[in-house]
Length: 302
Image 1 (tube, rainbow, N blue to C red):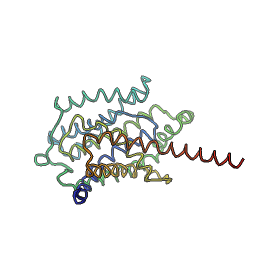
Image 2: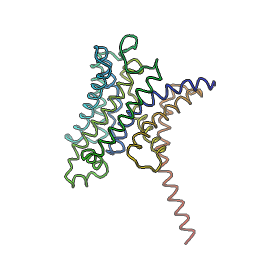
Image 3: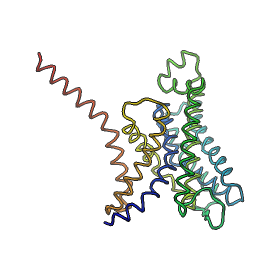
Image 4: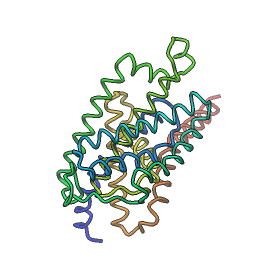
């Protein structure tokens, strides 16, 4: 195990972590703010990548292609939201149905191909794995801009209505808030960010693949829970969003280390599941242990 090889892999892990961090912020909006389990993400990321790739191949400016990737992701979120709010389908099932449909949609977007190449030698791209420092700067600018924009938005009346819907839907409805509309809007914003992440990822890796979003929800949840661990008890909203993105960076650093240590790439999904399980279980186990400890202490006093 050569330490130099590990050091050389870290800049790439940082770039990928920042790109996936945008997706993780989208997951945080549904998972932490809306309290909504959205599984659309696994394929809406691919939708964003597919749309961006097709637009770039068609000669479109790569920045404008990202705008269409955001729009495509938002439409996917809209579909999930309407299935849940209009048709009354449970949250998790509505996400699964949209995710399932998006597989076929993504194949049609890519012209029936499972992979579209957008090589930097043929097309003008915003970022590429061949130029990692540039990719870090570009993705970092996107992360900061998104955090600032969302910090402003969720401080507005509309943003506060979305947060109120996630905190207490019944109370929000009693205050005259259309909670169904807020859910749909939150899902659109979330999946729009996921689509943006997919568009950036397609440019970074030089292709859009039909399976590029598989397991994205696991990475997103890992980033959210790691970010929460990094944040501690601080409750600043902008910091919560930023540490979510940094959670994705930490996750990719961990991946780089375990790959360097000799873990087979075929075991990465298993490793990811174990990491997420541990971080999700820790708060519950800590709370349970604390309650048990206090109960024993109280009994001793009596």
